[in-house]
Image (cartoon, rainbow, N blue to C red; front, top):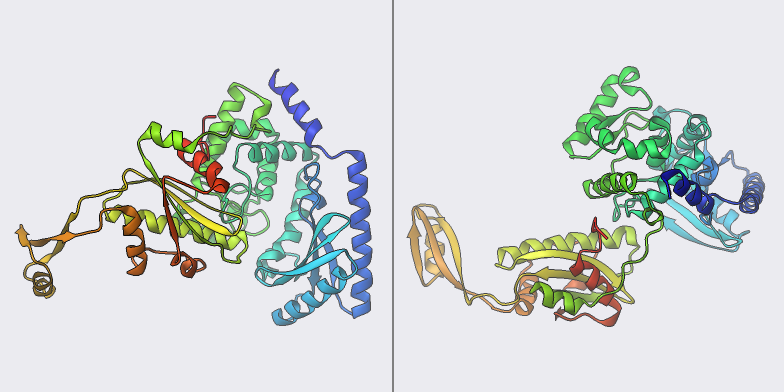
Length: 455
């Protein structure tokens, strides 16, 4: 099939049906009415605003999550907004099917209604970036900007979103670090149809700075401060938010996820296929077979999962995995790859290593012989010698990695995520074996199919 036929076929699969649109519109009308009645009953001066992909008509079929923002006047003190906003959210949610309080910059309410997730989020009623006081305030302006500038290219956004999902580059959560839905919308506004965005993947990267709001002419110093700050963080892209020159829309996008988009865009243009949008799940293989093929080893650390949401838990596990990578490298073990996650009530850190045994003796570098620390080093070690002006000694060490890891933890020599630090201290170390529920993750890590660019 040619590229046009494929994109048309994909659109048929991802574009909401008329029946679906009618359901969503009815739902939003009902929620708006409920919110209005509740606001009036509580005597509040609050305006309800729908934001997000439903309000912009860029949602994919089946994705009906509703974001209803409750906009308070600018003169409302922040503490009052938090208190009254939560009270209002709860009062609305009590008329829905179920709800719970969640926490971001300030508390908000997560509810469900007729099988659809509904977020009720207090914010300020902003008209300009200069009014923005909390991170969520921009959402109203984002929705307004997209609706004013998309100019009928809603389906092009849908194609780009689905492509990014298919190639594993979608999602701005801190543990994903991919493209946000808003970034996808901005790219369509800036570069035109979906295929143009793909054709410009290299140009977008080399151009580096995208300024759809023309802030470099309107607010030069503010925009340049954003560029300098983000350039210092080595971001793959700097997309100055068209509604706020202080913000980089792509701040959460990392090099790996842009790289996936970059390679997959070229591959799709050269050899178009439905698989880019709806890839088949990787076939399950034998992780033990992978270990035999590679001659490496798998060390899996399992411990009781802390009661944390993914946005907090997964970054903490990743930080801990990097801590183990550095600590084990210092101890003479080569870490070839790692993965983190959880299965059931257990969290895990998997480490592929080049060996599980090392020599009994390590060479321990010491200070220069004329420094204050030299006498202490000389006294504490039996076999000491000079190499140039630096002292060295032999250090007897534990040989097996299963013994080394508990020792590293006991001596606090691993940088761990604070949210999982206490749980990791009671850890089970598994060598070349994982519980059944983790076998798939072990195979994906060892086969490099997780995050791999070639299927």
